[in-house]
Image (cartoon, rainbow, N blue to C red; front, side, top):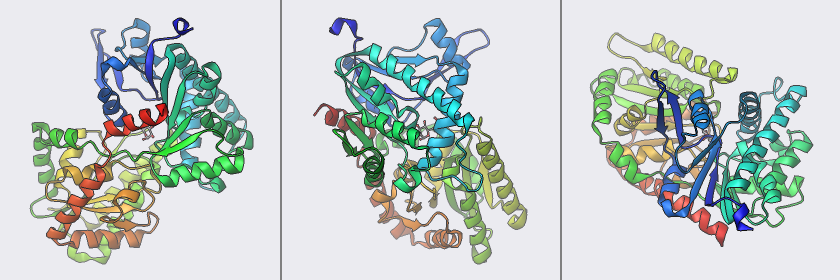
Length: 462
Ligand code: G6P
């Protein structure tokens, strides 16, 4: 029987893969490798594990790599028709499931589950089936498969039917909605999502809170967990990688440039996010404006360095949000700025070296999401910061479960409360900041990415 199957013994499935391609002017393919927990996790299990990563072809370069059969070993990109992928990724995953789990809908305009939604839902099923079939084809007898995130909730159930011999896990990198919010989905769709997930042997979540929310949904709407086990794995920051990377010359160069922009002797409040509605960047700026209004002693003495990198720009709601962030930053600069002082330094072009430079310089990090599965920025800043940095952290970020004791906690909707927290963070004595910073860094690195991944594999096999 084994001979009719593939040869991969450990498989990962995710929409976004570890590599992306661009086609150069001379027609050559250029590969760019990404980072993140899964990449370090897979490298930790070594090349003899016959690992395979199944992901979507997302760009023209990716599709060209698939056509030429030129992809990297260990990665299989699925060239799903562009319209099917757009419906599944933009329509269902990022406009519906992401919104449900982050509780982002705004009545009276949203959500609307109409004929267009039904059409997109059919594409989501097709897209999930393409993954399930590819995994079924590639997996060796008894192989372990770890499916990632809200893009692929139907895959465990579909794969279980195709290949009952496999050990199937699913990991959610987002929060899970509480039952009262989750039930906004049409009943049949909610049922399909839950049954799809419950096709897995084991479901992983970043915090107990998200795991409990899933369990509550399963109990209310799907008759319970059945035989599916639940586990919590709080992905931590990769200290070795970050500390080494943050001291390379390109980061030093960017620190010098940022110091110029900030100006001599000023405190720095740093935030780094994808420009994503759940990250709550607009309320962060409003809180900073409130700080400057309520505490004029900080005028000229503080700069808010905000990096808001482009994300999901096919969606109008994200483009509008980016424009709103830009508009508000300009407004604050016009209102308070002086010839020698720019209160908000906003950068919108992705640059990892510059993010690390800002982490090193930060006196205060502002991480105020409405809801967030974990939030790795909250974990990375304390690890990289040169002098120990105060952390203003939303109680709705998964990271708060691990960092809450040494952070200054905020309700992300409370603008005056967030302004007060920024003031407290800016006013913290340097010794206290350094001490808290050390404890934050220790908590943030408690579960390094490699261990996080291996723990899941072991739990699945056990
Ligand atoms: C979140 C999701 C990931 C996703 C990432 C970037 O962290 O949990 O699955 O890859 O956002 O979003 P994108 O849509 O660009 O892949």
